[in-house]
Image (cartoon, rainbow, N blue to C red; front, side, top):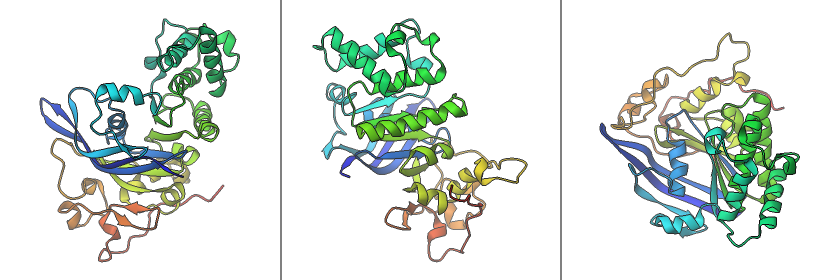
Length: 337
């Protein structure tokens, strides 16, 4: 697969009355055409900011401090708003996490999807616009689209509203879809349907997807590769098999221990002690060290490099240094199937 997106050493900051918040710190990643990359981590770790930085949807208080962004090999880091408007929708699009805030409650759902279609093809006749909308509704699994075209969002369930948001995001057949917590606030059955839908769209359209989530269980169902984020940095990356069956970073271990599949026989799900650090003044060394039961003195003093485990698997932890004590993964791995 050819490379679609490359982010190199990207850093994003927010100016606040308390000081500069370093929301994304030196992130590098690549995404191929048709690939699903899951970005995982606790709330506030920089996942959504990373996606919005690529699309230049950051608020006025935010700025890209360093790094480069390449789309199809073209450096778009310094693109102005007028140039970015040409890319949004066609090159990449975004599904936000709350469909009720993404949809206007007073306008029929079909008309809102039609507005997205027209935004990218002003000359399309009305009949063709409607036909395109009905095709999009069918693609995302909204049955009886012709009947539901003129219904307002309150007539749709949460899952159907999320499907409508996805239809609008796919209006211009983007090469890359950012899905920011697309299953939040949905029940388990509907979550599974939305994840299956994302995979189906990827297979039908060849759309690359960046799936933002805090739930590793979501990752197992939908992703090809995983990037684990903590305190604005990517601290482990690999295939789904790498992360689930050979995790190496203590933070990844902690996230996985909180999954029911890895906690069978226990009365409660283990919680990660402590809180993430403030990113106004990030700590030296490994930011996860104060919450890490396996932290060594060097974790508090020096930031670990990204160690290579295999061609697909990398992790930034001093436990991978040849001089470190050998620590076995403390979680009980579930069996395949």
